[in-house]
Amino acid sequence: MILKNLEANVNTLIRENDIDFHIVNSQTELQLEDLVACDALIFRSDRASQIQVEIEKIRRADNPRLYLKPIFVSSRRMKIRLNNEVDGIVEGSDLDSIEEQTKNLLSKIKEINPKPLSKSMAFNDRVLLKTMQFMYTRSLDLKPKRSRAALMGYHYPFVRTLIPNFEVTTFLDKLDVASKKNWFHTKLEDRVNLCNSCGSSYLHFVESCHKCHSIDINAEPLIHHFRCAYIGPQSDFEQEDLLICPKCDKVLRHIGVDYDKPSEILTCNSCNHQAQQSSIRAGCIDCGDQNELTKLHSKEVHSYVLTVEGIEIARTGQSFDIVEENDVLKMHKYELEAQVFDLLRYQEIKKTVTNKQKSYTLSVDFNESVLDDLTNTERITFTNEFKDILGNYLDEVDLMTTRSISSYEILLSCKRKDYAEDMMETIRYNVNKIINDNFNDPKHDLSVQLQVLDKNFVA
Image (tube, rainbow, N blue to C red):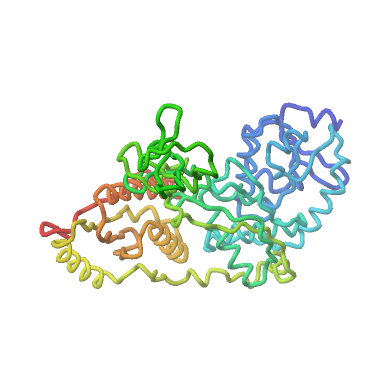
């Protein structure tokens, strides 16, 4: 009878040794409310993408009876394709193979506060608490897994079902705060360099010309002629099959006796500039931004183990007060009050009269209505994080001010026009992606405008 029900084409509920298993043979008409009453889920489908969608719905629910639900699949291949984010495998159609594991999971889940998570709790805080509860009920550590699909090159099982790819680094900041509160023991696993614009770890390192940034450069050895002390590129010495010194016309026959090659010289084929070292830039495969090595964002990747204090918080949900750092708006080192910003902008206009390079103001505005569903704490957190993102684009001489939660202005001091225009387009692309990915609102009316600061400037 069990075998027949497991292999049926419709979803069904089976009770085996006081455990209610919901057998999912088809994702059609699968409703979350239908899953609350069962003890465990078994997905029989061979379509990993469909199962992944359903798992994400379940894990993103606010009811612990849903997001902590034991989930099983029917094959090892499917478990691997789902990144091992399910609890186990049903061997054939034998429910006895998962009975003991299911009972252990249910026993641990009963220790968790059954009250649904409050909607007033900040989103990342809900993700953190869910993660801690999942770690406790599964007796798991939170370990990073290498993934070519992950923006930073790593993902964390369970966490990846709750948050978008590009928010992982922000969530890691939250984990670091929790670690400082002694909720986790941590172990450093890796350090990654991330694109300063989009946070991607997929970087292509290229050598380029210091002067014009062209990648069309050639390297050739420098030759040092011992007898006359002349040093020059090898091409200066080459005459047919011989090496002849251009200074004293002597033939160089034996390296180490007549001459040596102490280093090499780089020549740009675009502008003919010569140098002994190239400029190295990290091109982002995802957004195309060309990062200077000093501007790359370095991120530590840790594994996390719940402490005794962390276990107690995971079980009860009490003393979960991790948002205090985000309860107030932060003033960043590059940020000024609007009145001071306007004064310095006026002085910048006066200075640009004598400067060869121009200064610019770059404004970022969008429709505030996209934030209507956020709580006050979430709005503050969003503003702080949004200012952090904009600040990543600024040099030490640049400044920023916040006009409102949806209006920001940046002062770019003494910049080339192409630099300012590239920054404008990069910010437009990334801010548009941030708003779309977080709020799914095509009517956000994003405006990113660039104006040169000269006598014709109008605020």
